[in-house]
Image (cartoon, rainbow, N blue to C red; front, top):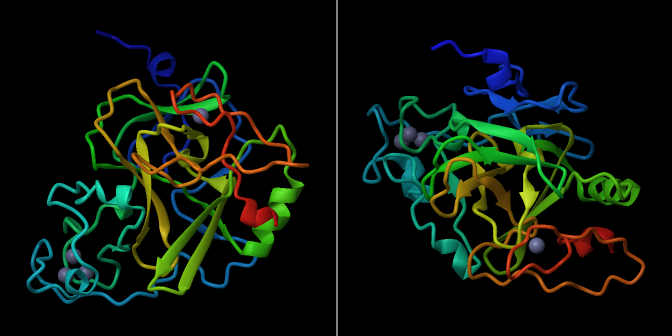
Length: 287
Ligand SMILES: [Zn+2]
Ligand SMILES: [Zn+2]
Ligand SMILES: [Zn+2]
Ligand SMILES: [Zn+2]
């Protein structure tokens, strides 16, 4: 059988940068620069591409918890096939940080502690939704706990995030995601990622009040986390992929719509039963 390749597959939005093409039939001239990884943006003090974490000296194919310094220090995050362990953990509202083996580790590329760094492995398509502008759907089944894609973009400072949030016009709909990690009782690490100008397929993902992806900060070579999205449940082929822009998942209550005096809030069209009617707004950036 002969297929018309251009009709069926469209354009690869990643321009060959991803292992699998990011299909898009409608977007002919992207207005952003595709990057599979985070890049340093204004105010970012550490270059996310720099290797700043120590590695293990394992010589086995795949690292084992009884002998690997990475797994002993940071714990085991994945099953051997790359599925996230303790996918229920997010329901507690807290998750232990995930550290993968990195460029300095002597284990092989097939080590089971290397997942997010392998990048996109599922065929995804960027498509035009009915009421939400662009969206992303999967062309194949994705089982619960598997890594889907990163939310990659420019890593920027709090001040720059604030400036960009204020400058954003209402018709623009890219989101600066703020991830706050609590270490111990007092210290908080904040990371701001903006995919508007430089980003990957993650920038086309829509918000949902009942999402099917779960966001988890994962560190590979750098102390700067990658915002990794995992399947929170089994996902069918052709389903739209969504995550909660406020970082919630599952039984975690969606953030109560805060008072919005003087603020233009964007409506949520996710269609979920528990929809809060507005997209989450990180008020701490605006205050
Ligand atoms: Zn390893
Ligand atoms: Zn190791
Ligand atoms: Zn290692
Ligand atoms: Zn909603």
